[in-house]
Length: 223
Image (cartoon, rainbow, N blue to C red; front, side):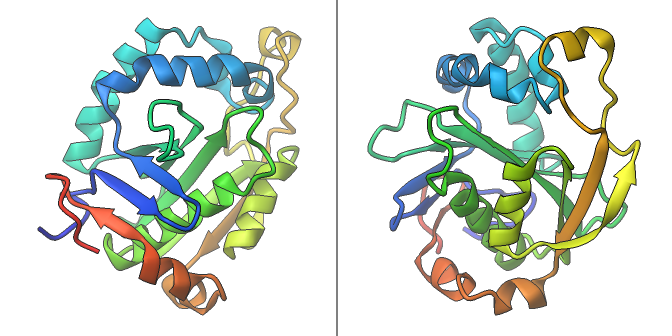
């Protein structure tokens, strides 16, 4: 069956990594809570949701909504795994409807502490960009990140995102309690974006498109 916005994939696999991006499952509540527990110090610096408890029960409750939104095509989250250890979460990546154009979405991602600097986010972002363009038919993928989050910016550069400008007040503002708990965001977001023409001209794109394994909602490979 064809993969598109209202029939998203059950998983994506880059065999060269190898790296597995899997659609959200309720069974991932515990692996995600474990990954978040390892990563909270880093996540609290820029992610407002990291300032509330991320327990197994919290992930179970979150996933009940995330799963429904995913299969309805209203919001997409994938969890990142090494396929050789498919029950240990390495992070997450998503496409979110934060743009006025229905054919544009915003990418966001995080990687588990201890796995930074291994190219995981860059590879996952490239996989999702191929899906977004070749299967979802998006005209634009944008990515906004806080100016203090230089690691996120480096991922975008390696993918090919172009800086469009700096936006004050675009992202959440921290409060005193968050700052006491590790929030260091500049609260100015740098907006970057990429379109299909630029994406397809990137030196990595054709190879990723050709080797990416895409599996439909029934688990059958379609690409």
